Image 1 (cartoon, one colour):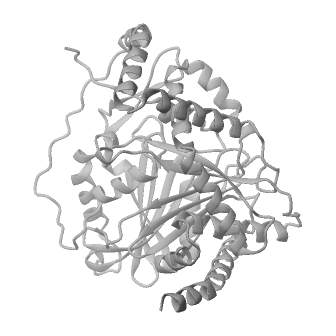
Image 2: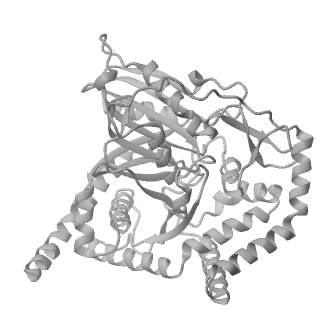
Image 3: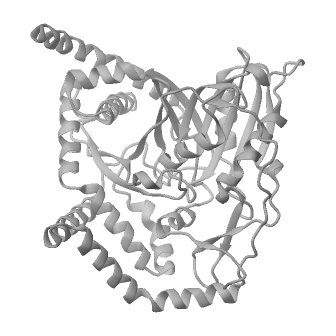
Length: 480
């Protein structure tokens, strides 16, 4: 039995390390606003020690939060090992805005915290406790490297660190952390050689599993291969260039907005489609307004977004790592009627579902496991020059009940998606407690008018709701 313990990153998880560049960090983040509640101290500050104790008491449920990276010699591939020097105080930090701090100041602080790379010699996460915010509130700014989590597992993580009850207290005792020894470089190399030797047997086992799972093996294989071919074909076509698609710098802007989930559901009820179709229609209207302000003619533009799609099974809830595929969706920015925009987007996403496009992307992702790490690294260094999309828009469902941190109720949670080179703006959404929270992350110099883009998003939603009301009224009259 080996005296050491480690876990190899999947090719997809490892790709987020390879894609990271000096100007492009690869951690996901969020800014959460809380009411001070029982954490308010007599001097007006926040009891940061209580928050740190609550987080520390939860870490035995999240082993990855006490693990660091180790690298396989001669390969650009990492493994997880226990951090023998783990210190909670390094990861849970405490700062303050000048009282009374405004939301604008919090946005600027969030952007500065988010634009700093995580220390790869330590576990890849940080939480900043920010006190001094107006209206008796405080914030938590969370950063977790994308090689550890995707959007869905990030929500699962939030459920571990927080509670559903305001009465939760720090456990009297938590399991003691005993770091396991890490393998030596020679041991890691030996396992790489063994893994390569087992590739033929692994491939045979995977084929047998596919055959046993498929009711009609030929049809299933045909569907998967066709979906993979369609996905690969879509990635070989470049979208139209826009002012958003230029080399990015190291600095970021961060902004946000919130909307009632009920309003989005009302639009979906009026037009059909999915909640995500409504979101993408709103984004279409916002992008169209942005391009018009920049003097770009929207008609005829091939503007595409990458929409991550979770392929996480129900029994994988709570597991870290990335279990995600993606859709590439063209936005009809040349269309000025929100009804027609919604119609076009709903038709395209329905086609993607029918063609099992997410399965195709998953097949291609699985093929990465068979590709040498050096070759993947070489491709990743150049992939951002040929991205088949203009923007990332990720929409993650969150809990629809209040969450609490050490008794303090979370009011709002604004997510943040990292930018790759030539992607100057990214949008992340999270639904929580009856509202949808939008986070807009942008390159500091490419999008100095980010607040105008956010205002355009609000205008696009209002326009779509106005378009939905007559249809909803007509439909209601018909039903009666």
